[in-house]
Length: 373
Image 1 (tube, rainbow, N blue to C red):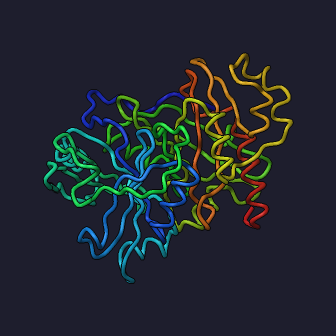
Image 2 (cartoon, helix red, strand yellow):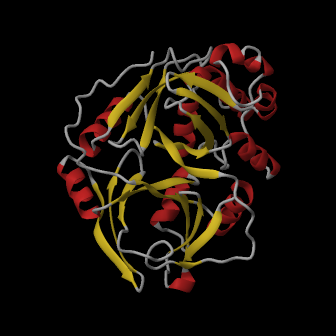
């Protein structure tokens, strides 16, 4: 059942976060991945770094849409740390970078509370000013990097040059990162919930147990952690006992451990966004028409036409604050790991609890086709 926070409240927000700064994905071919995110999702090219800018070990391309920044990074040599990460995990999110006013203080506050250092506070500068970055380890090989950029007017970070290709498809109406979901191992959810509370000052918003998130075959547990101002939210999932292999177990098997399962990105018009993404070849999970048979009775009056939601496969749910609309892509990598959620909130602050059964049955259908259920 849905539950309220059980942890003691944090008296002061000792780690104020302004939002998500960027997400760095380690990928096998950064240039081709950049083309994919431009073409399929409408991300705009803004910066790059590599051999032409003096880097010798990796190449990165940076794209942006709304407030969402993606950095796509590939190694330039074998036997590198990035290459080892790719061998183990395949394409996936390595860095969740968080925008702060003081990266040194963020590092000190989290280290004093038990974090493990990933990147000591480092000042990087060029003719456009300076940036300070620091970082800590989280679950699996995922890390958080704190980015202080108040005194920087460059395109992205020092060492990156503007990237202006002629190929520029229009955007798809994506605005910002709504939340990022992490999958962790058996019985590890509470450990990482405690980490985010004690080390980073997050609070638990809601929790879901295997009665909320289960089907005839599989189940999982989830708790949602949020920072003080609510701009950064991390649901954390762990497997639960079921008759067959759950989507979390499948993820852990193919990713080689804990990591980011999906990135939820917000739009102001999900119908238009999904129509655009469909036209560009993005594939989404589908639900049976029966899901929409009594949708109006379940969620009440909404602005959108039910027939259009049915046509596109968009799900809807309501809480005390309003309603939301959401849809989930199929995995975007060869391994069945990372995918995207497109979400539009019309007052609702929840995460679509009423859609869990339909969603996870849709995932199970894909698992069955892959032979991994």
